[in-house]
Amino acid sequence: MQGAVHLFFQILFVAGAVALVGTSFYLRERRARDLLLQWAGGKGYKLLWSEYRIMKGPFLWNSASGQLVYRVRIRAADGVSVHDGWVRCGGRIFGILSSHTEVKWDRPMEPAAHAAAQP
Image (cartoon, rainbow, N blue to C red):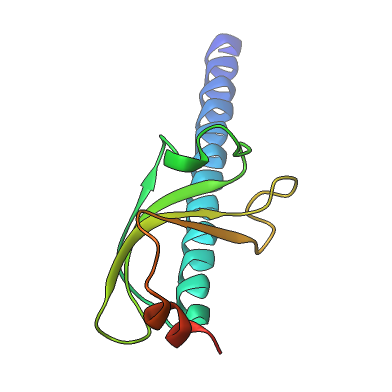
């Protein structure tokens, strides 16, 4: 009987740990997604597509583990031009607890599209 109780608590502990890790990943992804949407809206961009990337593109060698990187496609504030790039969400020290975002475009944005996005 004591062995069965011990096994039950081991299973309960493992299930709790898995649930905690899963919840942590979900909340991290959700916070990064919110940062991405705030960044796009704040610049006047419409986010057409985004995908989380493990291989962090141009941010590969200088990103902290708490930062998430997305591949994005946006429609600029002019409503016409479309741009592809990489967006890093979170700061170096506090990760996604920070509201910092940084973008690197595949090609430089034309001045007209960039100026339309400025307030």
